[in-house]
Length: 363
Image (cartoon, rainbow, N blue to C red; front, side):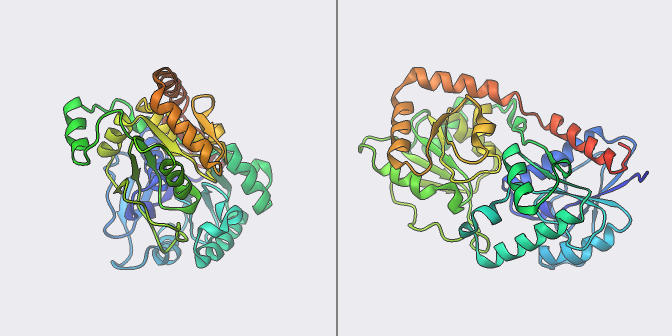
């Protein structure tokens, strides 16, 4: 029985998005529960350090290497003799003992959302590492079914580790802080609609903007949060229009402010492996309008107002309803807070610890 676990720390050198959030939260939870295991997280030089207590943080390799080269060449040497845990989608292609988290099967199901080189690489990589991993982890039953199908995996090799949003629990945003931030954009609490997500065609930002633009001129402003990555995603088409406020990538405190002050989060994705922003919004009491696509009904349960992602008129009507109906606003806010309590990072980490023990690691 091995006692050594290595963690792929590439995520700590990447731009912080939902994928990196999941990896970091799970590492922090493992740091709490790991007692007997010897665990090292190997980091590319210059990574943000996580300040862990039990897990050793170690930078390896020369500075300046592209992260995918570091992951494929440097990490396997550093992790030799360990069980390697990969929590952010990719993994070394030629490493014998590893466990890999794949968030979804989007490169197989919606290839047009990505650059061609990205699709080719990740399709090959997912097929390769799924055959040579102890287990494949994913974040929802929807993603589990899709990955089983496209990778031809046996059910027992794919384990579901749902995301959570209790990293936003007990966030204290004062009315003054919220007002001062919103004043920068001439916004008022409860008087704007929020969209959160990368500029990925699967997020359906164009459909949302069309729906928003179709509303009467006294409509609530639309605030868009999220960065872009032109090396990964295909272009989303028309640029964001002048009547939409794009705040780009922001820190957690600012994101909490925007959730707390929004009339609703609109999340009309064409495809989702889980859907973390709706859960984050629910923690903050922000009503959620979500599409009925992918894993979103599994994540949001009965706590969201659902729309068809390609029904622009339906999205517009849902926004209109939440904008004017105070009872619906209160019902969705309450239902969302209750729904969010069902997802805890500690519970997911316990599932992960069980999978690690099945691979011979004594936690």
